[in-house]
Image 1 (cartoon, rainbow, N blue to C red):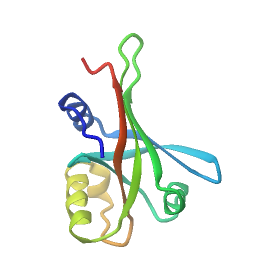
Image 2 (cartoon, one colour):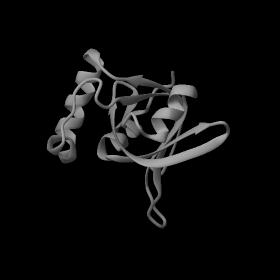
Image 3 (tube, rainbow, N blue to C red):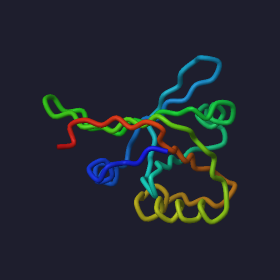
Amino acid sequence: MKEFTKKEINFLESREEARIATSHNEIPHVKPVSFVYFENAVFVATDYKTKTYENIKSNPNTSVVIDIYKTGGHKAVCIQGMSEIIENGLEFKRIYDIFYQKFEWVRKDPWGENEAPFLKVMPKNIISWGLG
């Protein structure tokens, strides 16, 4: 697993929206998601009835982009890696607590174990630019 640099970690911790790309039968699927960075992985909230969740079950290869698109000042971290589904247990509880603290929408509509999973994206490759 590839390690994030300090500049990449600082950038990831300052953002809350990403785009995740998955695929199934060679058909790509990209969508915006909420995420958190924790212990050299990116965690994405999803639901059981999403195309993203279905794709990950059959193909764990994933890409995530966290960026600021600004003319003359683009900043981004692009992660290519493997995803793991986290539905319950200690890791689920830790990540849920981080999401709960970070996002008002989680506090307004809380959920528990086995009600909605997280995707843990573990980086095999990291590309970043514009982070100074």
